[in-house]
Length: 229
Image (cartoon, rainbow, N blue to C red; front, side, top):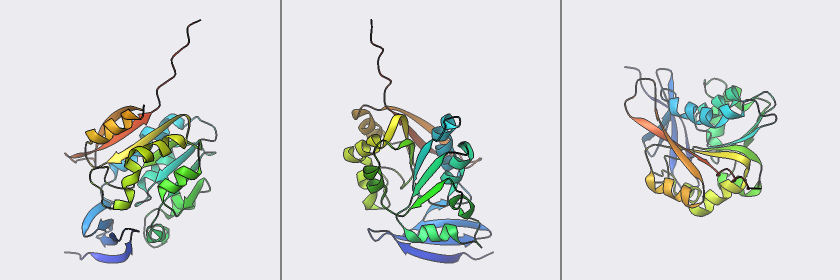
C-alpha cells in the first residue's frame, strides 16, 4: 500500500491546523486531521461554479468572486463557464493554501491561478466584500463546511446577518449568492430569507458514484414588482 505523504502544514487565523497530503496521485487538505477536500471528490465544487456562472456566460465583463481557494476546483469550473473577458477574484486567507496550489510539481490549480482573468487576493473574504460594494455579478462562498459545521470559527460572521448583508451589498443588480454546504441547513436558509433573498437548494453528489451529497444554496434578490399604470 502506498503511504500518505504530508506535503505541507499551515494554520488558519483562529489556530486551526490545515495539512496537505498526497496518496497515490490524489491530494487532500485535512483540517485538524479530518479530510476537508480532495482531488478525488469535487463534483459539488464544480456544480457550485456552474450554477452561479453558467447564466453569466454571455454577460460581457462579468465579475465573479470565489471565496475560498481550496484545491482550485470551483475556480477552474468558474473560468470554464465564463467568457474570455470575465474577471474572477479568488480570495483565500491562508497564504500556504495559495502557495500549495501554485507549486508547479503538484497538479493542483496553478494554471487557473495564472489565468489573466484571475485576481488572487490573500485576505479575509468578509473584508473584501465590505471593501467592494456593487462589484460582483456572482459571489461563490465555499470557505467552510457551512454555517452549522464550521471548521474555522473565523468564518462564522459570513453566515450571520451582517455577513449576509455585506455579501448582498457587494452584488451588482441581478447578482447571485451561492453557498456550498456539507449538509442541508434550514436555519441558514431561513437567515437568508429573512434578509429578503429568494433561496433555492440544490443537492449534488460529492462525486459521480456518491450516495451522500452536498447542498448548494442559491440566493437572489427578488425581482421588482411591475408598477401598474
